[in-house]
Length: 144
Image: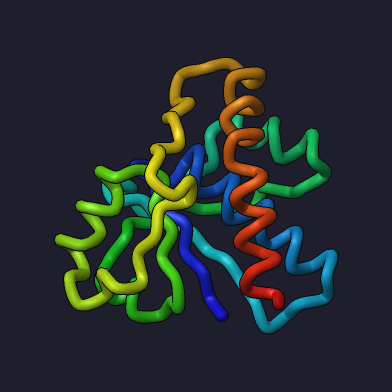
């Protein structure tokens, strides 16, 4: 199973979700499940934001190899599940890959994950902590 997390610039929320989810998979020895991420307004090859990298470092997760990429229909077709960070991301994803709309879900059910862009590392950690229970639940549901 391949899951893609999607936000705006693929530098904050979706990379943290991607890296954390893959860490869960690695800890559980589940090579059959993998996560990736992209952004509806991202450019290919960008780095994870410094505060997001700091959060990952505090969790013992290496983010140095992470590179951003733009959400495309081609990428959507490669995934089994597409997880949007907000309703606006879900709408943009549906426009970019309309035939993949059935795969799109919000991470926090009907709530948006707040955008931490420009905030402190502490603010990023708070945003990650709002995502973590949903990421843990998603892992449990797909790992069965």
